[in-house]
Image (cartoon, rainbow, N blue to C red):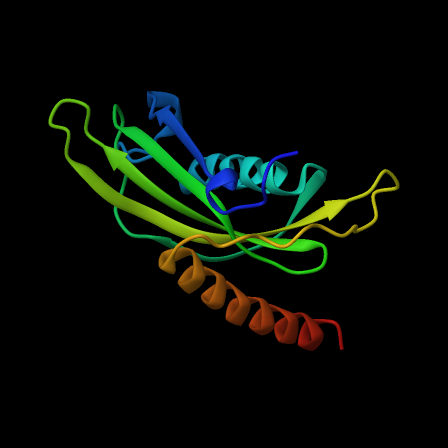
Length: 158
């Protein structure tokens, strides 16, 4: 059984931006970025929970710079925060021009995943173990966002 540290939940994924994934301006479709982002974040959630997981929410997805056809798009994810059965996964997306090596911060987002048991019901997960000051900062920020999401959900289900 692996330790439940932030570093053990890290995933780095690379994709090449192909012509059929771009719009008329040569930029990757936002929906394609979201697809890859969800896949990368899900792998971090699986690595932490070691159980089936589902995406519960995506928030604060900010597109900062376009990834162009021919760029290498890089997805980095790890678990920021855990509660009883859910976890927040942060994803940072960068694009690299393979000819120049220039890297741009393309997008960032936070996704919430819920671990499921064999009956597809939420099940408990172990807490994340922070190892660095950056892990602690991200954990505390994730906890604040968790509380905000909980309140938002209460408002939506009234």
